[in-house]
Image (cartoon, rainbow, N blue to C red):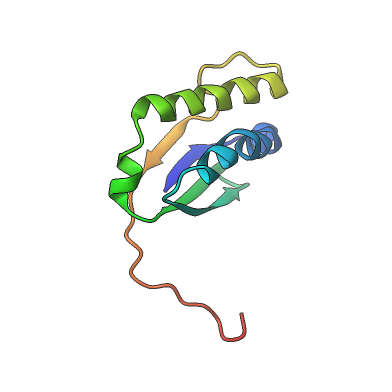
Length: 108
């Protein structure tokens, strides 16, 4: 789970850059199971929950590859906003959670 500082002025550009850069890259990873994007307008923060088949498969992806995707994400975001920031959407926290159970409502 990632917690990011996403000001209201950058929310749409962040969301679009996520869809243009991170989504296609993630979908190419064999162990990727999905993700959820949440945004809190009061705190101007986003939470991104990314699901992987296993922690080992996520950790097998090199830091260099992730850094390259992040660089493309930042370039896309800066192009959309006219900015030149090295980190326009800073990471506030990252954590790993273990799914113990998933409840699905009846009929859904």
